[in-house]
View 1 (cartoon, rainbow, N blue to C red):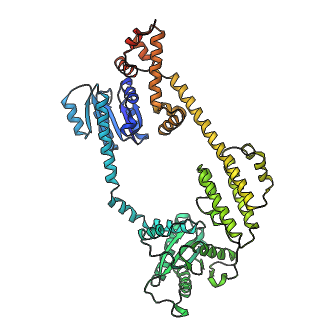
View 2: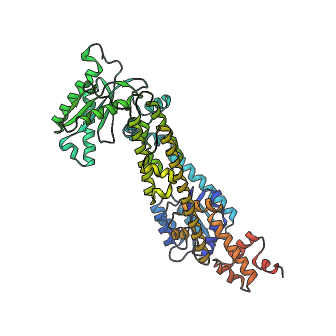
View 3: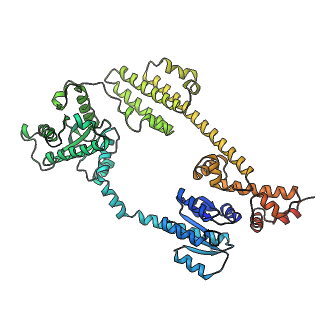
Length: 546
């Protein structure tokens, strides 16, 4: 929703508009208040204001001067001028500054609401134009290489798509790969001084290496590359349609890929003056086997790490590698820790289900004792991390029986471990929910105390938000969720209730009561009081039961 700034040197005018207009129904999410042009400009510097409503006649800086300054620095901000003077010259100046409308004071709620709604509609139409197909297409083309790299990175780290969704993404990103197609892979690690470069220079060097790969292999293969979490350059390849390959051993895709990889290694040494190690994978189907092929190539590289620099490892070198089945979902993004940090406990539960489904499935063909230990430590580590990050001790969050697993794991089966995981997750979730409720209750109490003490002065939303050190938009949401009442509505109601109390219990004059509840303009006070109680303050006092 949009943000509006109300500017008038009369506090009562600003606060009355802020409190009595149903801003949310107009499409306004946050209302800011200023009593001078200088304060208004300061608010503009710190908030993304969409609409400025300002009085014209103000000391030091007039409304015309204000919108002139705003137009120069924030030309996208729309303006509405208010004036108590029916002066055509002011109207002409307002139109010269491209103000949306010019309203005479005292402006009625209906006129202001109708004007703001029309202006909000115009702003929304402008947004829609800015998000036009041509602009989006231009931005898409500029970011195409990054989007291509991101998709490959997602596939490498285990993200899955339905065949139709993946086909659509490949077509959209102009990637000539298809589901079920045979693919090969190169994993390239920079060595010597190349690996010691600053991150920016290393990225440029990887870009240069990818260009060499494309130049060397472009006649036979489609090339798709990304940078993985280990800072390796990963290159996915597939045979171009119509290219003669496979008729002889020399032309077999695997053989060609190995020959080209060796040429890439030589060219990097010649032209970039640095060494690289290359692991050439075996071939498999896209995308189902992409994770297996990638992990095999990386594992092969690591297995020989430290033996030499400038390694060249091919698929035939990896036949002796028979690892235990990896529980991919354990490390597939989003990770357990990232989900716990975000408080997405339902998704954590779904991820745990996936982990144990995969664990039990692998157990049909392998002894899963080793992988169960791996799963336990990953889960226990993630749970302990989030509890400690929240400033608490594990024993203070978990029941005694659940806590014992951290001291001495007591599971005999994978199902027992899963049950423990779910109990632990529920305990963490319940603690987080209670802490959130407690924090919100403290915020509400602090807000009510501040408003009660400062009712005669500044109790605008920005002032209250500054007191509790929260963003105004977030504060509004928290207060509404906790109390069921909008914060501005609470301030307005409290003012009216206190005014009624003073009318009943004291002999203070109406203008004195107006000042006690924060209205410097008695006429405005009478107006908002009547709107709330359907009678004027004097009628309210006269009609009180004796």
